[in-house]
Image (cartoon, rainbow, N blue to C red; front, side):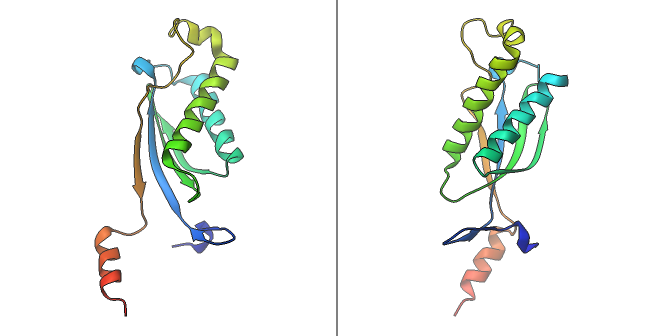
Length: 135
């Protein structure tokens, strides 16, 4: 493992990553073309502002996958809320006319739920073996 991937903080050194999936409200299939690229840019800029790092990001027409490296002080729920709220705001700010055709009752973009899975660099079995063989 490349040690430069670790985040060095005043009182910790960490490598925390989460796989996130956001789905468009009503599974609307408009994550294509320039709108898709803009959404990805908004998400990237939000992550930069909050010191999170997008390792990989890819979208399909109605959902987006991200592998995000984050800080131990940030909860997954807070990361998801921040990304979804800010990207929705920016999407409506810059693409409101297009979005009005799909969401005429409310200014929304993402469904209420999300998928999150922590990822590690080694398997659970390796960690268990390491712990069992200490001392």
